[in-house]
Length: 509
Image (cartoon, rainbow, N blue to C red; front, side):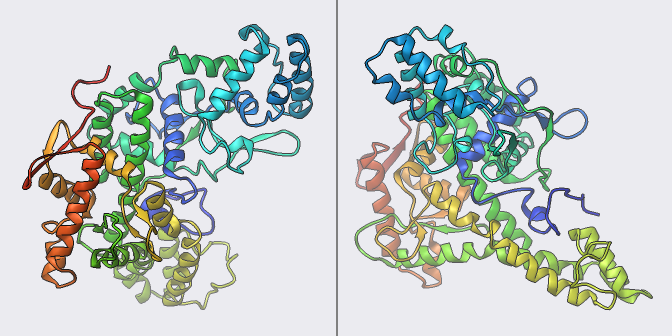
């Protein structure tokens, strides 16, 4: 008997493979922001399972802050006027109150107490707005996010209705960050990571967080606690890998705000691999996930073609997992017993309901009647699940691999795996404690992330005559040259190179 998932529509299939829920429109940086909101609410016991019950949290809303940053278009116009400071404050207050009268902002007069002049206030808004995520996108103002400078800069995605009422929205904060919290809390070293994150990221006295608090005033929170999403795995090697990567990044000698960029890239890569690994496991494929990566060069190579084929194979993994998940019900003893019972159709429907929350008991689905056999029910559910899967879950591989810099269409008509400089830098920061021999580095990224670049890691491809060894050797040389250009590889001789992490010479404080 699988646990029921209350918030699913009509049936649950994807959710029992990956969790409720991963979502393509919630890109990795948004997942980390949602994760930090859950962490902030549980900072007294970070990344530790609760003694009783489920993990809950009460998200912040910070409507005044986001109104000032993203729903305040006239501040610059008023700032540039040749009028007194008092007139600027009065004109801005009139305009802002007219536009935001229906919101939960309340009295904004506190701003005049914390900023000496209107110009200081406008500069603070400009600074925080420039550091925000997707500030120039066409997203609604209530779905734009300031950089997480501290606990006061965290808030959930909101939908604002015509009457000014605010409700949480699950489009950009779709629970992927909640699952990220559960993953890390179930990792072996989750508690140690929780302590590190609280120490490094939740300093309320940090200058930028104090500036955020000056704009926001009193914290605004949701009215009640919420339970986090559903994660079907009590443990998973990918949870531990992600946790170790984050601990490594936080140990480096770099400001925590710089480390956040690498935490987001690492989260995106590991979430993507979790998605692929679970899809493979569900479809019965025991081979590890393989990402054949081209290091982009101007010449078209066989590695480029293989990388595109690898991308397409992985793109189809999740859809194969959906079909396998539904059809696996046939392999159970309960299915055999249902077929041999006096009411095979009703018993088959009951078993399907316990697995997939479908068909409904009240008979509201017109496709299923008392005469519908178990085999027909499986076929109907496969068709419905595949159709729904392609709307969002099926787009995760493409959306996330592009967002973390793993895939590209540069110099090619086809998308393929071609890691960019930012992702390569994150891999070095995550993996290399001080220095690592280049061949060992290639072997490690194969073992940790399934990325195939050189001839040693691609021995299977050479053996199966899919590519010649020289092409993979050239690909290896291209990566070495890229890392040399980034200042991450030192060549001691033609046959001896070391990958060096420039941020490990002393532990960050």
